[in-house]
Image 1 (cartoon, one colour):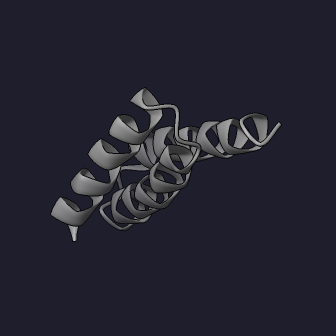
Image 2 (cartoon, rainbow, N blue to C red):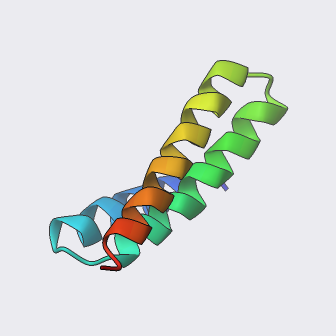
Length: 66
């Protein structure tokens, strides 16, 4: 599961380098996954961080829609 999230994160970066909006979608999925994993391992600060990353990726998704 964690390696899948790593791949999603890297693909998201590559898509954004090439100015593809879907990079943000990959980041949202990966960040949500990391947030859940961190929460269940009681890494609350890191879960919060990935929650913020999720919100920023969502914001990016909306901003690139225009």
